[in-house]
Image (cartoon, rainbow, N blue to C red; front, side, top):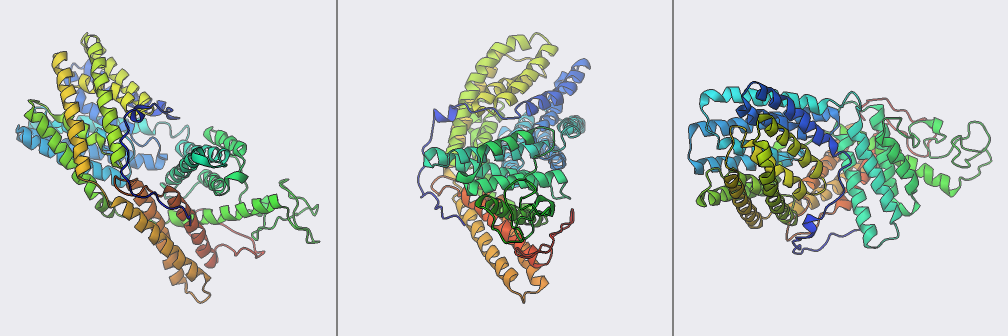
Length: 609
């Protein structure tokens, strides 16, 4: 376990200029950008041809689901997209029914705030990923203030469902071409981050930042690889070995070879064979299960050219070979530990929602107050103030402040862009649809650089959507949007300050303690010759469940105001230690030979440890 101590409690500074600094674009920025255009264009153009462009807001609700799950393996993406579409339809149904039953704005704002809180909590608990709850809240909040009758609801929901099904097909379209694309990208990012950490191994502030980023990248890679719990493929096993190599580099960055790590990363990003690092499960690599290099040809040299090995005369391995063999043994242990962790199902949704109660309360309070204040200022449709408040809430107050700054700046620049684009969009239905498609592409292409830059395109997009049923005065739209943005950002941030999630850090510390204790117990049981198979199995499953819980807890709580920073490094190191202990329990059950023996290590593809 790491000896690193968490940062002491303090009030974090609230940045302004730093919040607007542009970063590097995502490696796959074009994927969501092209996906949303492909999902929005056909339904919108079809409705335009039929002369019913007023129904496009409902199809766009389903089309926007194509923005989700681009970092997920395709087996998991299929499920996530399906649940997102169902969640979108559920929120839209509640909003449409509410709009058909009452026109009381206060009631509608209250319903919208409660929906936003539920959507925020569920998206955080399930870790659905960006754009998380914001799109769902935008769809349901906008629908609340559209005149509606009960008889129209089934047709409108059918349009959203049909567009959602098309969005699902768009999201899954790359699967036949690159079936392991998301896993490859995550692994390559982990290798690149480990190489950067190795290059800055001399220490200092830069080195600390690179190390932290590398641990986060490795953590993200494991999330991607472990999210699929069916029978792991040969490709995924090879990627797991590369992630373990990245972990080995983080454990001893001064001894790592950055060039080699980067070469592996480049090879992984492509579509060719995954580079082989040496499979510790096979003796053909010249490594026996006891970590001793074998020389089947009797020449005194390893068949892979890695250095000398032990001969019958008992010559010792050199330091490089010993280090390599030790890495392979560690890799083998971690692979078995990962397999054991994969066998444990995730926690039930209800148990993950409990720690998010402060976040849900914060969202409900902030969205409701933002909507009420907007109504008091004379807004007829205060949904934008509600959506602005809902979009602010991040993992901690500092990030929430940064998002507020980004949202305000992006929206203010965006209304200026809308004022320039509106005359072109009002030339006709085709011009309007093309402008909407351009804004969709721009928003997803730019939002990876910084949220405010993406908001510059999101704001005119949202305003253009309101023009689908009929064109409206540009001046009124711009004025209302500016006021609602300022109200939503201010009131939403005040609500975040008032409702602070101070329990988040304690949950992570508690999860780390649980993993430590479960690991110690499993190690004792594995080392006890008299332990029964039932006790060993119970200890193994308890540790694997603790590791899964730790990952979920750390993801849900990245830090808050007035509390300690999250110990990201400790989380990753605890996972590594747990994997090795899990491997020891599997070895104790006879599925893996003890180091130091000469028995052959066997592994059955897909077998549950």
